[in-house]
Amino acid sequence: MRFDPVDRLAGELVSPPDKSISHRAAIVGAMSDGRVRVRGYLRSADTSATLEAVAALGARLVDAQPRGAGLDLELAGAGLRGADPGAAAIDVGNAGTLIRLLPGWLAGQPAGRWALQGDDSIARRPVDRVVHPLRRMGATIDCREGGLPPVVVEGSDLHGIEYELPVASAQVKSCVLLAGLLADGETTVVEPLATRDHTEIMLQSAGVSVRRSDGRVTVGPARRLELGEVDVPGDFSSAAFFIAASTLVPGSEVRLCGVGVNPTRTGFLGVLERMGGDVEVEQRAVAGGEPAADLVVRSARLRGTEVDPGEVPLAIDELPLVALLGAFAEGTTIVRGAEELRRKESDRVMTVVEGLRGLGARIEAAPDGFVVAGEGELHGGRIDARGDHRIAMLGAVAGIASREGVEVDGFEAAAVSYPTFADDLRGLVTP
Image (cartoon, rainbow, N blue to C red; front, side, top):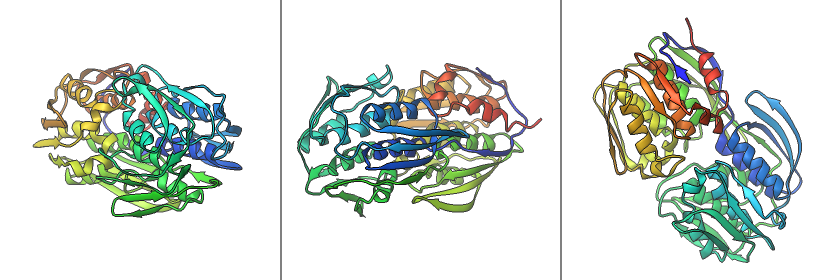
């Protein structure tokens, strides 16, 4: 799909529902007793895979009504210890969150054996980082040589542990905490750096006692979960593409409505502020423990900056956009401590570097990030999404801000998280 330069972006846009929170709402809802109402569950390939997985495990979708880019769902949970032992094969599609969180629930079941596998992209994404702590808890769990899927897990008796994450990861933290609900004794996860805390917020909403202090998160055994209701805010990571686009296209002013602004997700705003970006945060509200706001973004002249390792977990999904912004900035932009980018749907260090270089950027890869020498513009060209939804959308933003436009090969990958992205972007284009 081709994206040509535009003169200006203007108007309002409601960001699609948050993908991370939607995944967790389906999983924690399936673990709950009684019915759970989810307002604004994201409609995408990834989140559909999660709904199908929990349905296979015994949760029941009672009702689903479309609402914008989301669904209003009513889900009847299977219960904390009620996963269907007969659901032998679980297809996670392209959903990395699903394949890393679900084993935490299944590992503590009284019976059952499940094999979790997905598409070609998932087959290349490491899962040993959840296998190792679950084994320490007493789980019967295995994966392919090299720490890769499929994940095969059997229900076992678990015991609580204290686990220090070797790499900051909200997905690994969440997996261990879910297993801790089914274990004897307390389970504590120690984080080297703060990561997104959607799981902790949701577990507290479901009645779990969650203790958090000085980088430590502790849960104890639970008898039951009662999640009740979840309001899903707009996805900050999806909104970030429009933040970048509105910043780069001269004369732009866009209001992004109802965006989740959980401080463990919005590190990109701090980076953009240092670069000279113009973003106002208005009308803060809290729904189910998750803060949301309207973001008003205006175009701005940018300067280079440095992103240090401590900022990376709070902006991991937006770092490709930092590279794009750096190409338009004055001076040099450097990202360090982002080795995790190499373990996403693609090796995002190399896909970003090779993709933007092909569009005219002066960018070099580093083992843990990249260095961009700002030229103030991109001439355009062709970029291959390589099956990665965020690279597909990155190419679209680059196209409308470039001098000559960009052809995005494999743009259909955007449907993994944002099926209506191209239409929403075109809706902001002002003649």
